[in-house]
Length: 197
Image 1 (cartoon, rainbow, N blue to C red):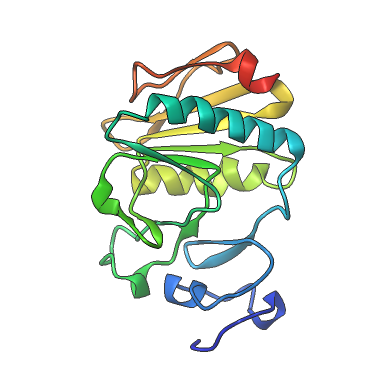
Image 2 (spheres, rainbow, N blue to C red; image 1 turned 180 degrees about the vertical axis):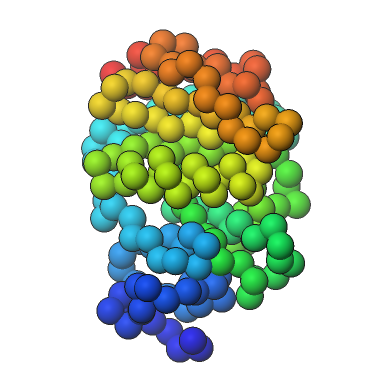
């Protein structure tokens, strides 16, 4: 594919695409590419989703203000190369836009976003995306080495934290409903009552 695509109907939703293809898409719908397959995103996050995302970003932004790590919010392309390929754009089959992500290695950052696994990814669940975050993205983030993954569940006012162990597998921690503490950033504490109010 070498032409600009302006309508999702021009794409084969069962086809396999690369990041090079993704760069040619000028489509209104927000899309992610997971292992070469197209995933449509919810058209627009709900008001509650946006409030939670904004509050987390503000809280965490203060924490990382004088830190070597940086926090980014969607839309922000995170390109995840397959482990068995070189990290050239033509070989990348996965591009996701997490709600929030923290990146500590500035060499992973470029004008297009992030190339490689962020240290922390936060996804806020909504009725239209829960299955993708809980299945495909969980496996993807584990496989590509995202050190800590938070699933924020607004309907339960809870956060589920998964931390990568020495074997490269996620270990789930007890669901958090009051004070959220990061495993990889031990000084980061967030009052969830304020986040979910």
